[in-house]
Image (tube, rainbow, N blue to C red; front, side):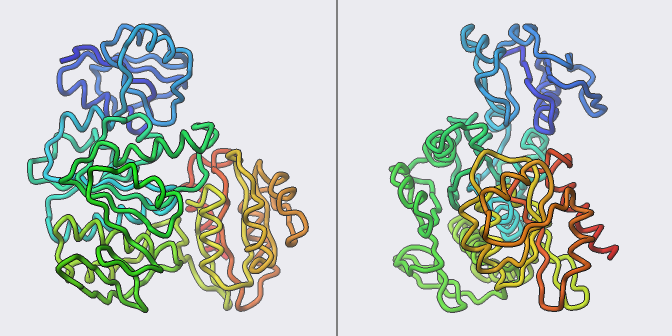
Length: 438
């Protein structure tokens, strides 16, 4: 057992794993490059703020927070000294008890899929938790788990990059499109991180794959040992889950089960999320009636094409979670026309030109906010009308003066929120409050 643990980065997961390690009896030293005060940190944890000094190199192992690049100077020194650098997920998995792990990743839709899967599984198994990139960090849940616990994990590319030894009983691969290239640098590196969700599975495990996504359809072939189950909106399988004219079909070699849930969340992407949740829940042992019941009650996640209100014949939607171009593309596909969209924020390093065709077809005007405004205007020049709104408050007020019945107002920024907000949740809540006040 390594007695000395270094924790690099004291965000949510860093604090959780520092507290867990301290509670388990490790000597814990934690370092964060920002000055901050953390009241919930275990008093046994020794801390430094404002820098990453060489003190952390006295650790037997370093637990890195997701999002910290591997090539920062202190981690380069750690590698030269052959100090293992692991993730909060890796550390936590070695300490918890569980019956089954269902792990979900994808560029878009993973939170909705994880949330829906968790609700289905919890109704059937009772003893289940949801963690990872959603809810509480896994380190917060470790001491609450038993050998009967079903764990549903939403995992980002950051978390998977740092956890090459990860293994789930059931892995779900939703889609892969360009994202986080400012961190991963290349699509090849981004895809490599995503593949960690199934690379260590064996022939008793399941890999759930979106057949409609071209990259997923290619890279699933690397899942050589697990049992692959496809889901699709467009293709019927002899062994898989697919959508068929209002029905969801669960097909196996021996059964052909049809469920007919009421679908309450909009967009073709959400149908993919639902199909993925059906496949994951079914191979986990949940009966089809339970799956149908939960889906029929499911209203979706906050900040993900979330209906806010109808005012004077105009519908307002909060899609603050759309922090990349592909997720905004998905949002635009969810509506017919007459969209007034709020876009902008902190640029993430990719082009906005892939939105041009949809914007031409469906968008009346784009209200620009934040740092990326000029780049969005350049990339989409000539396809619609632009309004320089600067911030969300101005955008909503300007929209309110020009909308007519039948219009749709959509916050779907295609950018990170960090230029004006703490995170996408704060951005979405701010938007909703302004809309409620109209």
